[in-house]
Length: 191
Image (cartoon, rainbow, N blue to C red):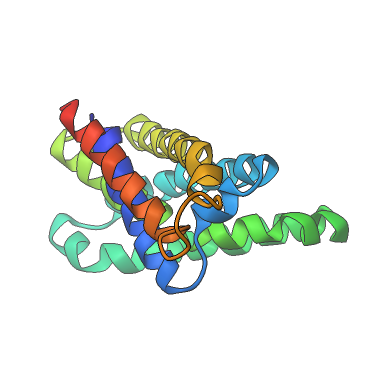
């Protein structure tokens, strides 16, 4: 149930914070199936590789210092991944760079990526497994798969919640928040 609870929290945070900036990763992904798959794969790469970086940071920093410096270190990890993925994509060719760079942009600055690093680190500390790289790797993969499931759930309702049948003032983001709230309550009831 860790995955489901974390997924709901990350999903809600991502929708709320990214809407304030004018874009929503899941809305962009739900609009087309190609975008959904590409965004989900990119976010899974970010969460998985980022979790390995969090494992390294958690094993380098002493315990008392970790509480104060981990946010900065995790931000640096995401920044390095962002620059690294863009560099690799650039050397793959200009056509691929133009086509796929948007997925790297919306994935790197997604709340799910940073939230995964903190969640995986906290779970490993709770289980006293901070030295176990597989715990971090598994958490990163779980978060990526959780994002894929959340994106599929959202994509299934996207067309209906943005259709002409929904009142104009309620259409889109407000309807999506209500939908996510109902889904969250249903998942929470499974606990």
